[in-house]
Image (cartoon, rainbow, N blue to C red; front, side, top):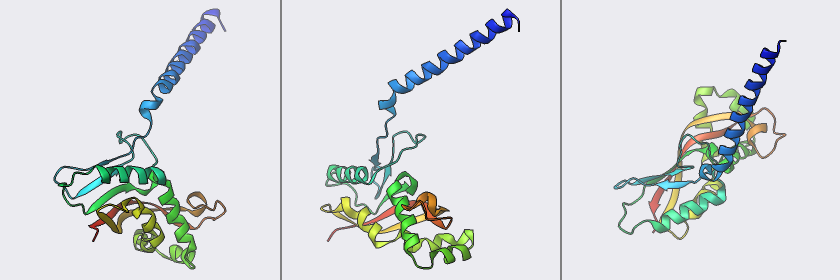
Length: 195
């Protein structure tokens, strides 16, 4: 190897190092700006709202159960008295709420014949199979908790586009095996005025 080739290689190495170091420093400096900041988006004159995991739709963020409760409670308290009556709150994808995703998987595994039923059901027809899992009363109680004391109650959960994965990956039990369980779906909370 000639001295010129070695020098050129060393210059390229330094350039790559500087670029990498610059990217790392910029990432650290903007970490607080990139932190997830969930919020509820409520279009004017509409009867629905959306819980967004972050202001940047391109950034992947997860919403804990505690954060979900805090955000929804704060939003409900801040709504003007003359705001349109709500009929639904869109949550979006369940995977943005790991506790919901895990609840789906665990609820499926608790059903006595789940493994046989999911195995026998063709992929295109599994949404119906997930109905009892997604509409599990225990999950509904968890989802309804931040609405306590507000003018609304959660009357149900609507869903579509259910995705399945291995239980060992999505359930609380890492030894759950290869059984397919629901772990993601588009979700909406159905709301009604509290009597």
